[in-house]
Length: 463
Image 1: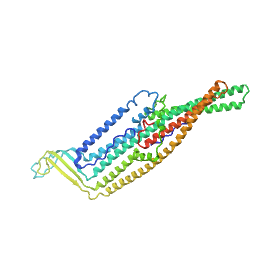
Image 2 (image 1 turned 135 degrees about the vertical axis):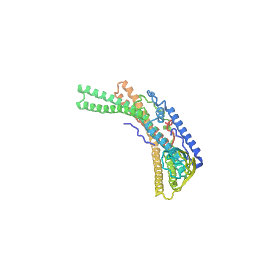
Image 3 (image 1 turned 90 degrees about the horizontal axis):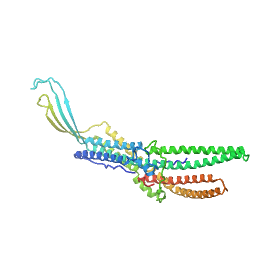
Image 4 (image 1 turned 120 degrees about the vertical axis):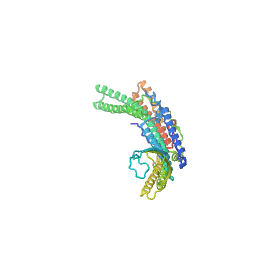
């Protein structure tokens, strides 16, 4: 079985939203900026759907299917990518939720009440109803909302970087599946030829056995060999279908199996192998997962700051317009405007607990970043070392293929002169050499794509 194993590691990165520090005087700007960001995000989502709509249009796939066409589907609505987009939407909703702390709140308050007025009250009516409009706003909370909002915006940036990483991994899976289909086809050709050769050998053995030229043991040996090769043939035929089904699922076209796949150019296999230090520096700086983790650390620091601000005062403003069913001299005012300040004295330990929780999350984020940096460096080192091994393997399989092609020509000439009868076996050997050479070339192209993904580079168009 010649399945290439995928090792998970941008195509179009979503726009990064920078953290915004606000004061209580910037409420109007925050509201408008929030609306602007939501509009931009909606337009980007619509534009993305327009870009990929041809890929997911109903109807058969293009024939032959190309690798570029398959990779284009990574922009679409595959479930794996939809989950990552849902995380972005959730992060955006958190930003909006935090921003609402500085928003204006208004509500209508109604009251139906009957009373027994005191004797000295000039209005002796028993109806004491009220209808009022109340408008309130958080004027200032001494940094609590500012820090929470910055943390939410940073979390949004992190989810966007995680989407890029998920997109890279999905593209690598598509490329792996595409190559596996091509290899399954080559394997089927080899096993089909091998079964034909084995059948001819078995048939000849039976004919010679009838003439008394070979024993029954020789016939049974030929039959056993034929059945073994026949089993490999049917396994290869099944592999053709299963690899195509996997590719169809990854490009979000389940059930639409491609009949023919175009051979990609694979220009990347001729790339010069750079120094490892150069690759590592780029990866540690631009890897989307590492970028996301660094942003998560910044967000965690802001959440610690917000939790510490829980012991600080709250300044609120309120305006009330009201109408009453009875007139009084004191409490029933037509309008009220006021400012209140709440100064915590004792919090029961809730602030300290919140700070401790966020500090633990900060330590977790820092440790995760260190762990992932080590993983990226180690994985990149293994890939870099494997490049040279694959280069030698390509040279070996190329030489083998050239030799088998010449040997096939020689066998064909001898077959035509009726000197040798092993032409079929030579064809099997050529097919097997082509399979091995393709494995080396596809593995090299996929390895370069994985290295590009680790470095935060685009995969599509570089194979």
